[in-house]
Length: 436
Image (cartoon, rainbow, N blue to C red; front, side, top):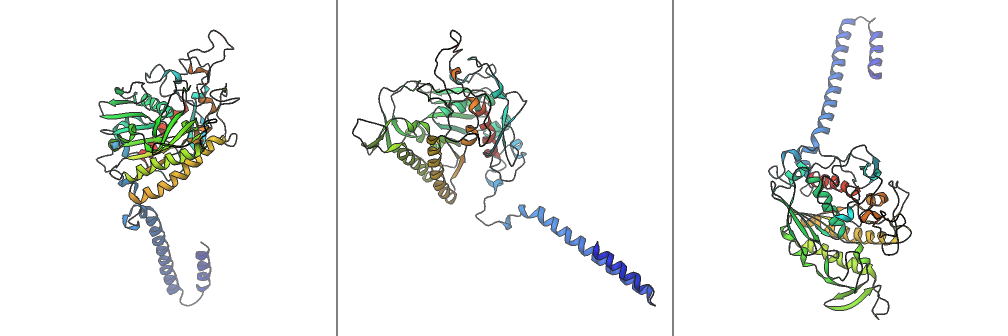
C-alpha cells in the first residue's frame, strides 16, 4: 500500500507535463502488472501450503505415511472419517470436570468383578465419575464403540499382564456391550485368563494372566497372602502368552508391581539371587535387576518375531495411592478429587519401575522402527497418578461398614472403580489405533 501511494504521488507531478496522456496510460499498465504479479505470487504460496503434505514424492522412502498402515478395505468407512490430527502427546494433560454421565453403570454392565464394583459395594460419593482426560495440545475424541468394533472385525485383541489388565478388560467390555454383548468362550480354572467373542463382528478379546511375563511359580491367594517365595525364571518367557502371540492382531502388554514381591531368581534352572530374602544366604540382586532382565527378554522376543504383523502396545506402570501404609499394613485412599499437576510425585518404587520401562522401551523402539515391527508406548502412568479418588478403597468389599462404622477393612488403592478413571484408557486406545 505504501509503494502504491508513492507511485500515485509521483504520477500527479507528471500530469502538468506535455505527455500527460501517454504517462497516464503507462502508469495504468505498470500498476496492473504489479497487481497481477502480487496476486499470482500469493496464489502460488497458498497452493503450496495446501498441497505439499499430500504429495508422496516430497517424502523420503523411509518416511511413514499414516494412511498406508491399513488398506481402505481393512478400515471401515466410519473409522476412515475420523479426522487426522497433528501429532500431540495424548498422555500429557489434565483431568477436567464434565457433566456427562458414565457410559455404563454397574446396573447396565455384567462384566464388572466384585472388587471393582464400587457402586454395588456402597461407595457413598460419586464425584469421581465426573472427570474426563483432556490432553493439553489436542482434542481427544470419546471412544466410539461401534466404530471400534467395525475396525476390529475378524480381529483378535489381548491384554497380557496382571490384575490391572484384568481391570481394564472389564472397562472395554462394558463399553462395547452398549453395541453387542460379548460371549465368554474360554476361562482357566481360576478365571484369571479369559476370552470373549463378539459374534456379529467375529472379534475376540482376551485377558492373559501373566504378571511377570516370564516363567514363574507363585504361591499366594486372592488377597496376596503368600505361603512360599515366588520363583522367577528370568531367561524363560511365560508360554501362556508366547504360544498365542502369533495369532493376535492387537496386544497391550505390561509388567510392573509384582516384581516388587519377595522372589527367588533362576537362570538356566539355577538360583542366581533374590529380591528381599533375608536369612536365605542368597545374593540380593533387587527387583530392578529382575525387571530389567525380564523386559529385555520380552521386548527382544517381540523384535525378533518379524512374522507377527500385529500392533503391540507396551503399557507403563500404574501407580498406587496408598497413604499411611501400604496394601498389607493398613494403607488407605480417602481422597475424593483428582490431583493437579505438581501436587503429587511418583513414589520411589514406581519411579524406578517407570525409569526401567522407558529405558528398555527406547532401546527396543529404535530397533523396531528399522525392522517394521509395530511397537508403541501406552504411557498411562501420569494420567493415573493424578487420580487418587478413583480406587475402590474399602469398597472392594460389599458394604464394608454396614455392621461397624469403624471396622478395619482391607483397602484397594491400586485398582480402579468401574465405571471410573480407567475408562479413559479406551479413548487413548481409539486414538492410537485409528489415528496412529
